[in-house]
Amino acid sequence: MKIDITLLSEQDLIALNRQIVERLRFLQQARAHAKMLEFQVGDRVSFDPDGRPTLFGILVRYNKKTVTVLTEHGEQWNVAPSLLRRVVDVTSPTEGQNVIHLPKK
Image 1: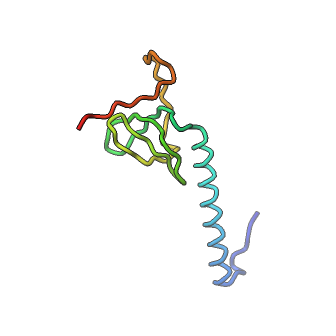
Image 2: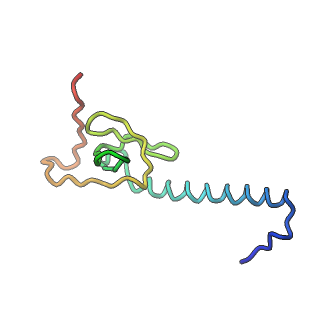
Image 3: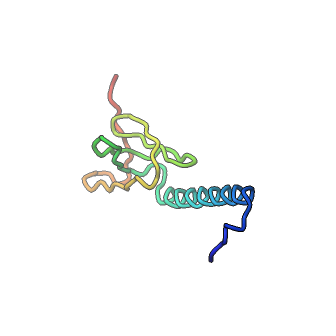
């Protein structure tokens, strides 16, 4: 499908651009939402922030575009769902146990 944009006025081009941007944002949000649904609150996850080693934590909340992860060190991160990996802890004696030991202050 080809659209001959040479026939469109400047106002028409601006309106078309707004529609294109809106549609692209919708598609990106739909992909993020679908990826978000692959995880549940309480899941153990990992992610790789820039310039830092891999962090591990528990998914604690869904946000509009991200999820909140509470790391093993008590840090709270908002992470895009596409950057998360589910962690399967094969050494855990109690399956399904979601406990984070926070450092004492």
